[in-house]
Length: 93
Image 1 (spheres, rainbow, N blue to C red):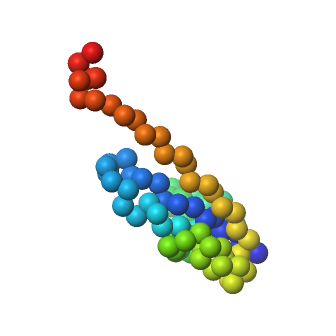
Image 2 (spheres, rainbow, N blue to C red):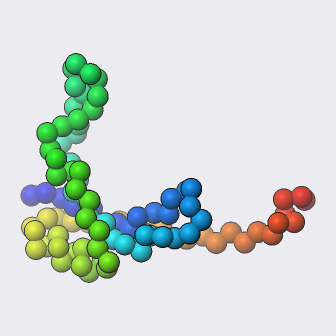
Image 3 (cartoon, rainbow, N blue to C red):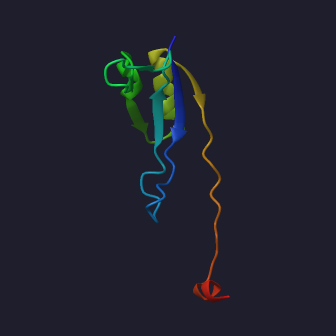
């Protein structure tokens, strides 16, 4: 049985807004670790299902999809946002 991870996309450190952080993503976890290719040395594997990432508008929709497809899933809670209030004058203290 495949295992899926459901989580919210974190805010990119290079962006100031919260665009696309409200979507829930379903990602299938690999069943076995990746192996190094003896010729190139790159990591890889034959399991292409780990490359699939599906976006859902709500957590309930992501859970329903995982149950419908027969995936065991676990939900990773979204990190709590910390608001850092800072004034421009604080740069010169």
